[in-house]
Length: 131
Ligand code: HEM
Image (cartoon, rainbow, N blue to C red; front, side):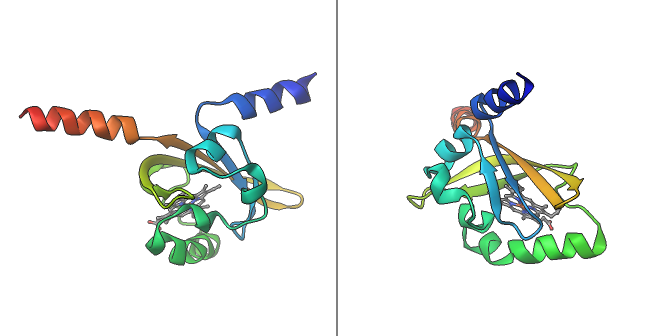
């Protein structure tokens, strides 16, 4: 049925997909998101999305959310941004982040789509090294 097809799509997407509430608490993450950061779904659900970032953004992401909710001026929503992610083992990697917002009865839901740019960065570096 439709529910199963949607779930399969979500789980098997090659990009990471993470949803969270307005306070930044992770509600769901697909398989690709878990693999990207080296966590199991059990380790991510219910935790703050801040755990997936290097120090600076980790400290300030709550403020980013609060400021957006106060001003409604987006800096990433509908725009996208290249940011740095931080894995469970501490390794950091570049990723393209796209965020969208959905207003539901139960509150606001944010969906992040995360595309790993590690390969792209490596390829670009190899080209630069040729010059
Ligand atoms: C805002 C970084 C993941 C949702 C921001 C901003 C930064 C940032 C730097 C503020 C941009 C600015 O004010 O110039 C990161 C990093 C992530 C991450 C490094 C690494 C994993 C996520 C995820 C979601 C999300 C997974 C959603 C599920 C938001 C929202 C805002 C925001 C809603 C405020 C609205 C906006 O600025 O458009 N993030 N973020 N972030 N982020 Fe994240």
